[in-house]
Length: 98
Length: 187
Image 1: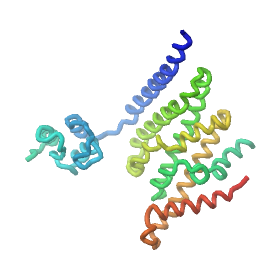
Image 2: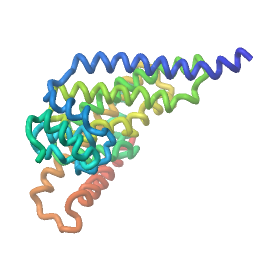
Image 3: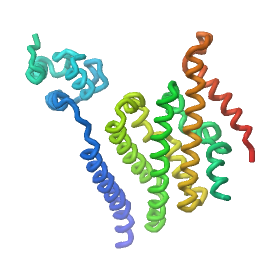
């Protein structure tokens, strides 16, 4: 009985352990190799629906946020978020969405 | 002597692209320009060598715990984590190369040459040193193949290729001809 249980537990433990170790290393690398980005990108990304639907014509919400922050996409470019999201993005960008 | 054979064997006789036909996707995708192909080769070399070293050690653990059937999933986890690390590192150190490699950088995760070499090293029963030498040779062979094709494709850009062949078709034909040349290396 114990043997059977161990047989089940070992792979779970192994993968969890590996996952934790790799997550730790990657978290360290994330801080160590942090790239200074426009803080607006993260702010815009936070108000977007995050569905990554591609309805705006960009590869995903992150790509759209980057394009808006660099002025290559309109603030009301998200068809899912409609007026509400457009308003919030325009607040971040400091323009009116009319 | 054996190590020298393993190293050069992996570059010429068993070239991962031209003889084993692994890693064709980045081979065709990033070989348009010489500098990006060298960058890709370096990224693959790093992931390949570190991944096969780590997987060789993990395989010992798997055998010890009788979990050999977990080999594939554990190896993929190691490779995915390493690729993520390389991506962060490159984004910091060389944003131009990061942009140039584009989607092919995260796609190293699914580059079968890397999983292939990790499993091959186990299958061939190599020890740790042989594993590292074999991976270094294989990644040198991969880089060599990329650089050869990129050099030819840069010249092809300027030459008059029939319309039906322009772009990827002529690159595939070129790759086939180089592969034939590589099949001339026989021990």
